[in-house]
Image (cartoon, rainbow, N blue to C red; front, top):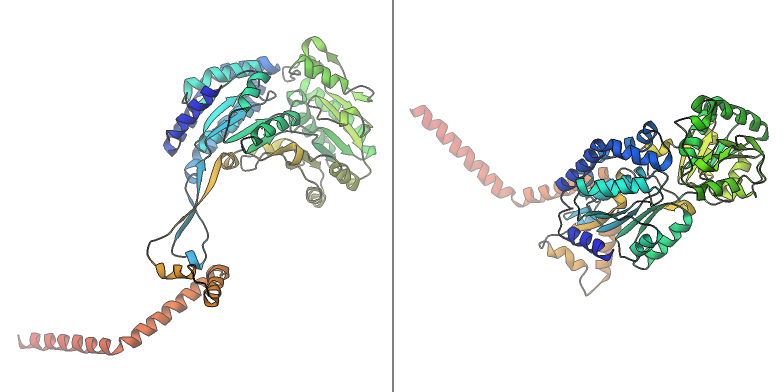
Length: 508
């Protein structure tokens, strides 16, 4: 393990990951891998999660291709140093911010979307110029194997290293020193990762989870709301970190929501959900039993059918759920949708704020003022109004949690920034030493007063331009006055020369 990390560090120190052209070449190679080996990737994902090729492509592969295209287009701009604002004391100096790679970073992927949640952060790490150790989730073993097989065939084998294994290998990996760690998974393991990172003062990005609430206002289009909730909740059999975990609504809406979701499930998956190619399975028996235990003592309004042999759990809705019930104490991460009745939006806001900050928050309402108010009065990693999940798809938005749902964010430029150090650069001249006497001993009140003016004085651009023009005008006036006699003599001389030449031309 140590040898692999040191090999990556030696490759990084060689400097070959830094040039823009190299980064672009590696990203293009990664895109070529996804395109050329698409069939192998889709088969691996399908084998792990009983996912159809259509779903595997639309939920994972297409996001990767879109992210790579976006980064290839924007990276030349991102790596360009950004000019920094200056004060009067540094007006003639060069000040800029340079994004430099952190070094060797560790990416620990998740099992629920085993390809996209491993490769998408890798794109950002490559774009930022780092060496990367990739640890896919061993739970999705088929995807982990295909990633470890394909990446060395397309990417630099010293800079980008895949390490497979379980808890033992991950524990050993976390003993190594990295320059950044990005982990996607549950909160319990996130704490272990953070503790290990703290020993080396390694910064972390933790993409965790939590119970993402979904508030349904009485003033909304229930048909559309329930269609979108159904799609987001039961996609990947509920095994999505930003799936709506539970619904908050007024008691009178419960039966309507149940009926409309029931109708939508039939529309999406047919009469026999178990036979639908679009409905996945729970990843393994351990998680199957964990989810089944959450149903104990609950009022099942719809669904509830299970098959342990195939890890099948039908789309399920629970009504009149007690906030203290077991199903409300942990992230469900399965196809169970509790409905918790609340009197109004105020009570919903209080309920959300009384619990840990979630990874996502969804609000369905025609009242935009209510949506904005609920955003202002709650906290979550992300928010989507009148839809679910979709904020994840926008590269311009940072994806990440807050509080117990995560630390840091990535996607698009935010991935580049996560894996970069924003280095402050100030380049001064060895000339103009006179101004530096201001900061050299001995000090005096006049020096302090001048420093206050040069450092603390703030000008807007208009006033600064006016000041510069005034100074130039004064300088010009002084010069004209000082050399007025000389200028007069030169003007007279020029006049006499021109007159003489004119008189001579007449004689000819």
